[in-house]
Structure formats: structure tokens, C-alpha cells
Image 1: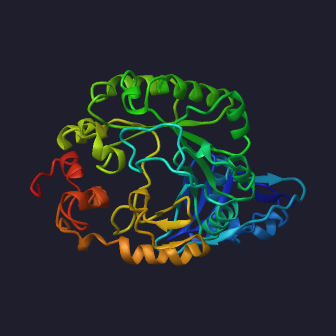
Image 2 (image 1 turned 180 degrees about the vertical axis):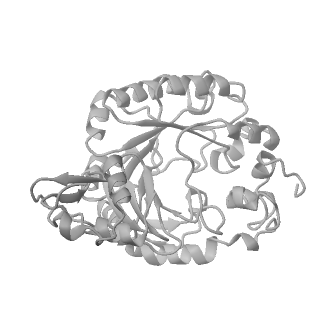
Image 3 (image 1 turned 90 degrees about the vertical axis):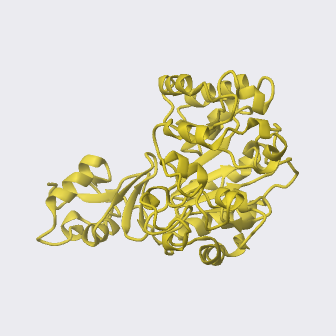
Length: 395
């Protein structure tokens, strides 16, 4: 244990959060550490100016916990006082952990499966963006996901980036990757913790996104990694990439991609006119076993899908997610009020679902509410997840 003349300080890229229970969040590694109240109170005093003799939680403090925090790099011991501000943000319940910011509906591609449909010409205003980010942090937010359209098409994209350093959040760009040259990657490294690039197959990627888009996207991935930006990959399963998943699994792993997420597109937007791309649900469900790394933005407690997420559209309106952007619950003038309304209108406890007595309900949480509504109703089971979990009695 350190001697009393040391000054403990919460390590850089770590933030305290009071969600349903206290946590410390490792922003760089996207990892939450649960805390008891004693450890939480200790970390609140780890401001780099309070001596260890004062900041420890008392004579009966858990020395093993403090040693664990030191070993994990959650706290650092300083020989002299170097203060840092400790923000202790209190979240609403259920906690709002993830904010999807669709900053523009402009795009340089016309993907055949895009749920947003045709691109437009709307950019979120800089003041709206900053207001949303500030409120999100004050509500205990963890991860800010900046998407579009294609986010780099926003006319003031780099001005938006300048907003980000003031906030203790994990900042992630969701992009098609085709506009990321060496210069863009180098600039992004100043602001962003992760870039997620959409790769929807290897030989089949261009079938969805246009000729040459795969080569441009992979060049973007290379540029990002050359600038030491962690890269994740998102893949939508479709008819033409169904035989490529083993190849993609090895390829992305060999490339040192930090995570690979696999999903199945819903029949919305451009996909309505390109239904030849859609797999049979049973076949699509079998592909959900692929992927690695960080999981999806899952619900906790006794809630259905999306209990910790909301989305902002380019016009500043707030909705449950991108699929519900035409059903706004408010706007970024008051994100807290909009999220409260969202929870009342679009979030249910599992006992409200038609499939509430299913043995795997706590694993799948009923699945996607948008897909469920397409196939049976907003409280119906999501048939994709029924197939994925081997439960076919509701189909």
C-alpha cells in the first residue's frame, strides 16, 4: 500500500458514473467496473489533491480493492498534488448509456439495404450537437456513437469534432469508410476512440454498396489502423454474403479488428425495394453466432430491447432508435424529458410481452421491437430471435 504522502487520482480515460448502481468506466477499453458505495466514495476523492490518508475510506478500508484499482490502472498514485476534476454524473433509471447521433442524412453511397432510404440534405446544427452531447454526459452517458447517413458528409464535421474533447465519453464514428484517407484518419485520431466500418461481405460487399466501395472501405480501415485508431466492423447478413462468414471471421481476426458485430437488416427503407437481398429468417438466425469482441448495447434488469439507448436525428428530434425516427418523443432541447417519454412509450418490462413465459426471455428480451411489429405487433416476439434460440412455438 502507498504511504500517506501520496495523492491518489482517477486515471485518465476513466470516469465515475452512478447508473443503476455505481461504476467506474474505462473509456479507452469500453469497460465498466462495478463499485460498492465505499469504493465509489473513495474514487470521488481521487482528485489528485486529496492525500491518501484522507481519501481512504477509513481504518477498515478494503486494501485489496485499492490494490486491485492500482493494478487495473483505475487509479494512479502521485508524489505531488496535481488536481483533476472528478465529475460524478447521476443517470435516470433506466440509465441512458448509449446515444446514437445521426448527424446528417447525406450519404455518398446508395446502399440497397439502407433502412433510412434515400439520402437527404439535412445536417444537425453545431449548437444542437453540443447541447445533446452535454446533456448526455450529465445523464451519466457512456458511449456516443456518431453516424448518419455518412457522418463525414456533414458540412461542419470537423467543427463537431472540436466539441468532443471536453466530454468524458467514449466517442465512436459509424461510417462506410470510403471517405477516410490518410489525412482524415490522422485528424480523427485526435478526437475519436473507435471507428466502426460497415463491411457487408468480401466479394459480395459491392453488390449492396456499389462498385469499388469494398476497396475504398478497406483502404479506410488500413488508414485508420495506421493512425492507431481501434477499428470495429459491422456486417449485415444478406443473401449474397451468407457463404462468406467463415472467411470474414478469419479475415477480420487476422486484421486485429477489435470487434465484429453481425446483424440482420429489417425490411425498411431501401430494402423494401430490394427484398431479393433478404435471407429466410431461419437461415439468417444461424449467422448471428458469428462475430467477436464487444457485445451489442444490451438491456439490463427486466426490460425489453433498448433500455439504455436513444437516437438523435439530423433535425434534432429524439427517438427510440433509427428505425423509429419517424416517431419522435422530443428533441435535444431537453434530452432528459425526451428520454423519460421514450421510456414510458417505447420501453416495456418483459412481463408485458406476448412471449413473457418463454424460457429464454431473459436472454433474448423478445428481440427487436421494430422487427416484432413487422411480423406480429409491438409486443410480439421477434421471430429472428426465436429461430436463433431454437424457440419456434410462437411462429
